[in-house]
Image 1: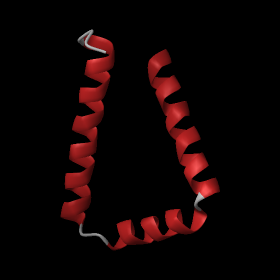
Image 2: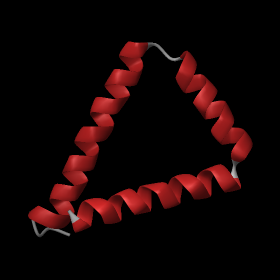
Image 3: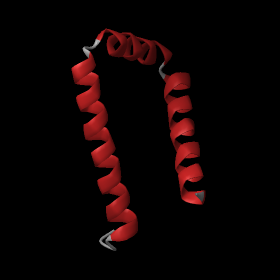
Length: 65
């Protein structure tokens, strides 16, 4: 649970930095995401989730990194 909360905090910090440093680009990206088809958003979400699990597995589970 500690790792989850640390990851959540890091996610919020990175997102905050992006919105603070590039507010116009972030706003444009949010508008494009709102206009994107549901199927594309679902596919991007699934791919992102799989990539995240693989990264966590590589860093924490496999001992490769």
